[in-house]
Image: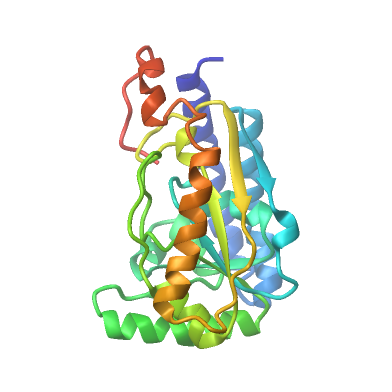
Amino acid sequence: MKVWLRSLLFLLILLIITPIFALIALLVLPLPPLRRYRIVTGWSRLYTWFGVHLCGVRYRVEGLENLPDTPCIIYSKHQSAWETVVFQAIFPPQVWVAKRELAWVPFFGWGLATLSPILINRSDRRKANQQLIDQGRDRLAKGFWIVIFPEGSRVPAGKQREFKHGGARLAHDLNVPILPVALNSGEFWPKNSLWRFPGEITVSIGPAIHPAGHTIQSLTNAGQGWINHEMPRISGIGPCHPRNQSNLANTPSRATVD
């Protein structure tokens, strides 16, 4: 089946199941956070299943032995919408740091809001930093891991951006480790594109980095250093990496939908 047809069918399925799970999310709102999480993330499991079996986007995870026994900060490269969903199948129950406006998006945002995310006001940096610390402490106490994308937003495959300090500051202030994660999802599930290309995404988990003995800057540098050192090993495989773009000459035009 052609890439464009698989991708359109995947989008159609999401359009059907997302309102259903948004309603389920509202119905289970009175339940405790972790129980609510396990029910609502049924949407993520379906998303992942159809991504694998309909779009042919498989994945493998390296370094699972590096997962700590207690909640920590998942400190990840960010290339695609893929990891914001499939991480729920890879890591223990987790919450995400996101701009508060996402909770206002119909259906998707409503479901997100029931999963105990850390929603911050990015227009007020001082207030956002305090929200991050206060809500982060609360989520860790409830048994959630915290996902942070230190680049701030998705960065296309083959590119990188300087890491922000928020994730390291949170780990430093709350005395929990960061867990660096490298991935190449954008090579198969690209940013701002409707098309999902078959292949195997690699998610590589590094050793936890504890904040003891680190400043916020040196902790940021350590996480960024591990990820940047790991990326060349797992990159350049997928059709959407810049070096392979010529192979997409016969693919329908990219759309600004994700």
